Length: 87
Image (cartoon, rainbow, N blue to C red):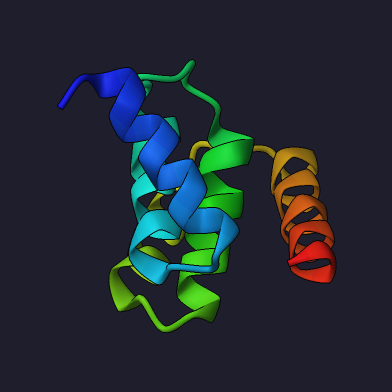
C-alpha cells in the first residue's frame, strides 16, 4: 500500500475512534513517515490512543514528551481535548 494511502486510511480510522488508527498516527507523526514530523500531533494521537486503552501509546507518549517543551505538551493536550469534544 502506498504510504499516502496508508496515512489516509489511518486518518479515516481515527475519525471513527479506532484505537489502532490513533496509535498508528502517533507513530507516523513522531517519525515523519508519510507526514511531516510533528511532536505535538504525535503526542495528541498517542494521548487519544492511550485513552482508548492502547498501553504502548502511554509508553510512547512519555518517551516523546522528553523531547518536548511544556508548551508543546500543553498544546498537544489541548488538541486532544478538542478532538474528543468533536468525536
